Image (cartoon, rainbow, N blue to C red):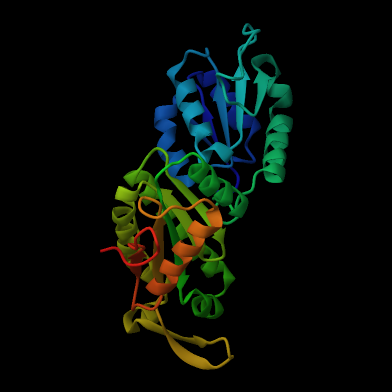
Amino acid sequence: MTDAIVFISRDIVLTSIIQRLLGAFQVSCFKDMQHALDLIYHSQPRMLIFDVENTENPDVHMLNDLKSDPVFGQIPLLVILPDTLHRISWETLFADDYLRRRDVEGEILTRVALCLSRSDRIVEINPLTRLPGNITITRQIQHRLDAGDIFALAYADLDYFKPFNDKYGFSRGDEVIRMVGRLILNLVREEQPSGSFVGHVGGDDYVFITLVDIVEAASERILQYHEQIVPTFYDPEDRERGSIISIDRENRERVFPLMSLSIGVAHNRVRSFSHYGEMVEVAAEMKKYSKTKTGSSLSMDRRGPSGLPAR
């Protein structure tokens, strides 16, 4: 949904104006935040526009929670303010830009274009999945370590993606990348609605952060749904055979299994990490071990403080 905008207002006249003026975009209109959240969480729009009736509106608190989130907080928020509201504290409304109601018809297109352009320049997100990239991932891990948080870091990687991409083409490959990112995001959010994080390292690599007690359940659900969904990206004959014929890295034709997903998990409940690189290295090591197994699998670091197997 590249050009998707979510507009939230109880004013049917203003809603009609927004729909008319933003006809070049895919505008989804809702009367309140509660009704909009499902679309925001599952289809992450490019932008939010919110009609502010008053700053005590419960929707304002829900918007602030959304803007405080490491994933959804990167969606630009433009608020429309009443002409009579002269003073507002931006510490209580986490907007990226604003527009007066009287100026909507004359300036909304320019202001939306400016918000989107600014977001593309300063927000570090993967263009395919709209998930945070490496800089944000690094900051998230280090911030939690510095704060003394106890958490789990999972590193997920698609197996046999390159042969699939070579046979079916980049377009279908991009669909798979988007699907896996959305799948991980949705299931992690279901398991831990607040305080979790999902990022896209690049290519077919992803990371997610949860509480230690949640990470295995979330990972298992991700693997389960992945196994159900990924065969649908193959042609019927390949799906039935359970394999494809493609080219390997030596440019030789060979048979490859259907794509699987390998997840490696590190956590700091037992082992201590001071630098994000140390934790990422352990998660990558566990992911590499998962990739030695047949099919989709999960490997979690269960070693003691010294890095040796816990007794």
